[in-house]
Structures are given as structure tokens and as C-alpha cells.
Length: 242
Image (cartoon, rainbow, N blue to C red):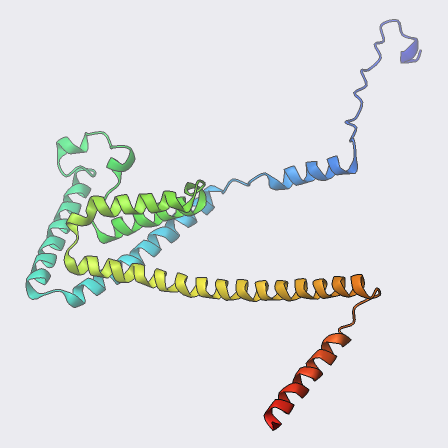
């Protein structure tokens, strides 16, 4: 006996397919699927981390080389002494699991800004790269004024640690960006000036066509301007002759 004749047979529940209201709905669904951000894989995150560390190492080396060129004999002696102390401290941390002493090794790691190591030039540069990447991606959603406030406050807080020479270096570094932005602004103003001149010329042509149509009817072909120009040239030549 067929299943439809069976008393215990229960007809399956039919779920109607989703009806698309219009072609635009289909396009919107496709756009939503395409707009979903893809999460980076662990491998990509690790590659990005290594790339940042390599960049931090390169920038730190350049900074240290520039500082060493201008340092005095006393500054060189202090730098070499500080480097030896840092190496000894790093060796002690390795022996005791990162704490420096057995007691410190048992201390919990600090979270947030307090947990960021800032001992070497590379540590400082890496922090700058991480902060710069965050600001360039999602930290400036308000306005550039937010970044300006951050930089001004940061410099104000640490200016006491900078020498006069280091402050001059910072000013020169900022002047490079200032000069580049001035050149870009001059180019932008020149483009705006050309656009305004072209718009004024188009408006003048439209005005002449309208005046011609109001007075004489028909389309304006610019012939009248040619005769006016010839008459002006003739008058100028006559004045020169006299």
C-alpha cells in the first residue's frame, strides 16, 4: 500500500522558499555577504607581529646610529655602561623566568600600559608602531583633532626627559611634514583657482547666450564678440597712429 493510503502517514511540512522582493534585495544580500570582514588567521597575525618587530628593530638601529654620531666621549662611556647593565639584567631575567629574582619571578604580570616593556630603543619604537597602527585604523574615528590632542599631551608629559638637542631634532622632524603639507596645500589652492576661473568663464558664456536670446532671439554663436574685438583692435591701432 502506498504511503498516502497509510492511516499513520503524516504529510511532510513544506517550507516555502524565501521570496525575494526585488532584484535590488538580491543585490543587497550579495553586498552584505561581500561586506562581512574576514578575520585574519593566526599565521597572518604572527607574520604581522614579526614584520612589526623587524621594522621596530630597523628604526631603533637607525635612531641609535644617529645618536652615537653626535655623542661625546662621556655620553659614549655612559651608553656602553648602560648597555652592559641591561645585558646583565636580561641574563638575570632569563635565569629566574623574567623577574630578575626568584621572588619577582612569582609576581603576576602587569596588564595594560604598565605591562609594556620600555627598556630599549626597540621597545619604544615598537610601542610607537603599535599605537600608530591602531590610530591609523580605528582610533581616529572622531577627527584629526583627537590625534593632535594625544600627541600634544604626550609631548607635554615627556618633554622634561628631552634635551635641547633632542627637542631640536623633534622640531626638524615635524617641519618636514609641515613643508610637505604646505606644498600640497599650494597645489590644492592652484587647482581650486583654475576650477573657479573655468566656472566663471562658463557662467559668462551662459550669461551672454541668455542676453543674446533675450535681445535678438536664436542661439548665441560668439560672432558679436569677434566683431567687438576687431573694433577694439582697430581703435587701438588708430590711437597709436595719431
